[in-house]
Amino acid sequence: MPNWELKNCCDHDQKLFIAFVGVYTVIILLLWRTFLLTPFKLITVFLHEASHAIACLLTCGKVEGIQVHANEGGVTQTRGGVYWLILPAGYLGSSFWGMALILASTNILTARIAAGCFLAALVIVLFVAKNWTLRGLCIGFIIFIAAIWLLQEKTKVHILRYVILFIGVMNSLFSVYDIYDDLISRRVNSSDAEKFAEVCPCPCNGFGWGVIWGMISFAFLCASLYLGLVILS
Image (cartoon, rainbow, N blue to C red; front, side, top):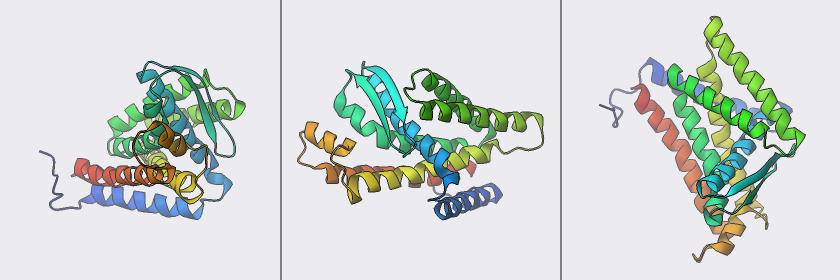
C-alpha cells in the first residue's frame, strides 16, 4: 500500500531525492541568467509548444507547424480544435511534463520510459519544426539523451535518472517563472492568458488567469515532490 502519510520518512532514497532536487534548484537559480541553462530553457519552451499541439490534436484540430526561438519564445500554428482548451495547455502542459519527469526519475524503469517518450517526441517534432532553432534543439537533445542512455546501459556511469530529474526540476521551475513573467508581472497583451480571457465567459481578465495558472503550476511542482517521496517510501 502507498505510504500516503509518509510515515517513517525519510529513508536513504528519499533523502537522496530531496537532496538532488534541492541541489538542482540551487544550481538552476545560480546559473539562471547564464548561457549554460539556455538549452534547458528552450526545452521547456518546446514542451510548452508541444502541449499546445497535443491539445489541438486531441480536440480534432490540425498542427501546421511549431517554432521555438532563441529568445525563449515560441509559437504553435494550429487549425481547428477547441481553442479554449488549446490556449491553457501550453503553460499547464509544460508544468505537468515537469512533474511527470520528476516522478519518472524515481525508478530506472520509468526513467527509461520517460527518456524513450522524450526521444520519440523530439523526433516527431523534428519533422514539423518550422525553424532551425527548434530543429537544432531537437537534434542536440536527441544526441544528448541517447548518449546518456548509452552510458547507462553500457558503462558504470548510471546517471539517466538524475538527468531526467534535472530536466524535470528545470522544466517545473521555468514553467512557474514563465507564467509569472509573461502573465503576471509584465502582462503581455498577446499572451495565452489574455487570449483565453477573451474567449472564456468567466468574469476574469488575463492577469487573473495568470495567477490561477501560476497556482496550478506551483501545485504541480509541490505534488511532484510529495508523490516522489510516496513512490520512494
